[in-house]
Image 1 (cartoon, chains in turn cyan, purple):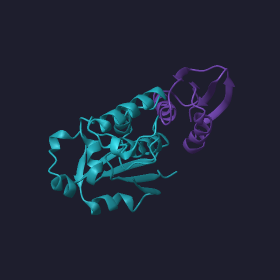
Image 2 (cartoon, helix red, strand yellow):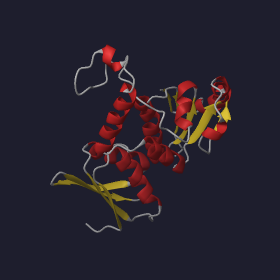
Image 3 (cartoon, chains in turn blue, green):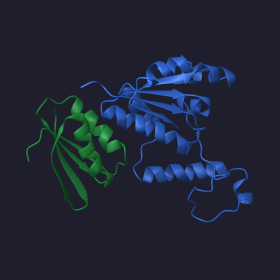
Length: 156
Length: 75
């Protein structure tokens, strides 16, 4: 049986959108897939050692379930983002959902390969020292070298 | 049913029961049986799908008092 392959392009850096790439990648790896994730634009935030800046905002996020209806004027007040993030993290923990750090670590343990988009690393002036290891740096064509051979390719 | 190793995934949500089951199987030998306990109802279909896709055998799948018990035989 040839090994199946999956590639994911992770472009978002918010708490809610950080989960799908890591959940899908760790699951696929557990199923025996060879997996690569290409982190680009805001997705690069997910490679930082410190993930405390990965937050969720109720603002312009009407689908986010809130315990009480909250007018947009209130959502934009200082501290609302931290509060929403804290509430979401508590909810995730209560439901036994792994933390991002834990899922990311499991991906690495199962040999999921992380690739950081060199262009956006330069564009946002990220310091590579802030990123976890191992991460490879490359461009779109490098990614296509793998993505072109995959059974599943997702853009998140 | 006899088993060689047990993994309790109670309280864990997707994808932890599957990912950690895979990890638990790594240091086991072919033919050995892993018992998995889970409380996530999604694990029922996931565990079967895991077996189907990885070639391990799901010997049994039962529910006891809100807990799901699986016996997985390593390929």
